[in-house]
Image 1: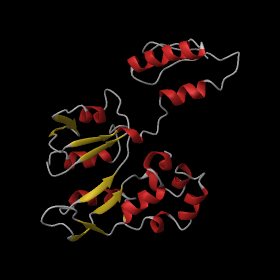
Image 2: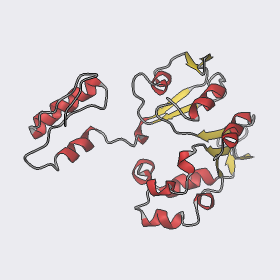
Image 3: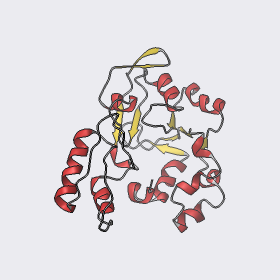
Length: 225
């Protein structure tokens, strides 16, 4: 994900995560300084030594900022590398921010955090990016009242918020721009990833704007390449 284009700048993200204290802005407690909540980055695969290669590594400013490692760049952000470290945030009673990625909540550590926190109205769940139909993430975004995980029925009482603008996938316009780079003779083009009505719209734009007739295979169809 290109954080500079999505969030304004890496510096802004760092300032947000670095705050050691939060100041109440409104009400009778306005101006009161409180210790900031603890922040956890919980992803075993994303805390490896080569992770920063996937994150703005082509930006010289970012490379310089992270030259001493992620822990030095964001000291307030705690990285949970082991399974035991991943479980600890769910024991905190005073508040915490847990950043955990997965394939639309279909697997990984996020499911354990959801199991422990969805039932509690005091918690909030922020879904970042697109959630495909048929996934747990989409069910939560669509407002389901109950989910089944690990053999249990769990009530969804925590408010669910969506930040769709942070998706790392290219949008329709970006895909069309990519398709324009092909010269004749163009290869066979198949649309296989996306919801059907969105693929129909993409197919129509490819024909109308580029004269490229894209094929949408049926579910289970075998394509020979």
